[in-house]
Length: 103
Image (cartoon, rainbow, N blue to C red; front, side):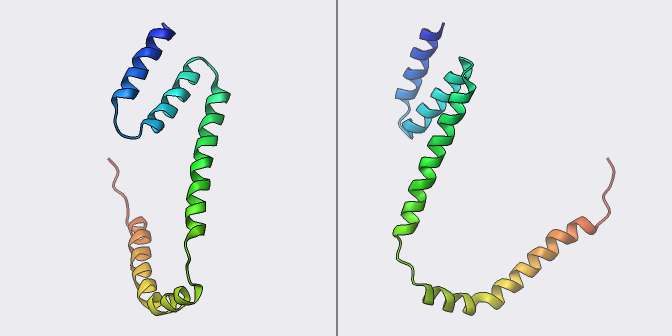
């Protein structure tokens, strides 16, 4: 049973052309869950997501951003941004102030 399921899933994974690694990781975690190794499969997912987060953090750290220009742009767009934020905040909280109809 397990061998036939493994062969079928491997055929499906190899036939997919996009993001094979992601599908392989999802298959491996589902397979471990199926074998009742929940702890190992959850650790597998946590380590994979952590590795992606570290790669994203490394990419952000390699960008050269000038803090002076960011501060200047922040002060330039702050009035408009706060105005738009106030409108959205009013719409969001205003929707909760209206009485709800019971179905």
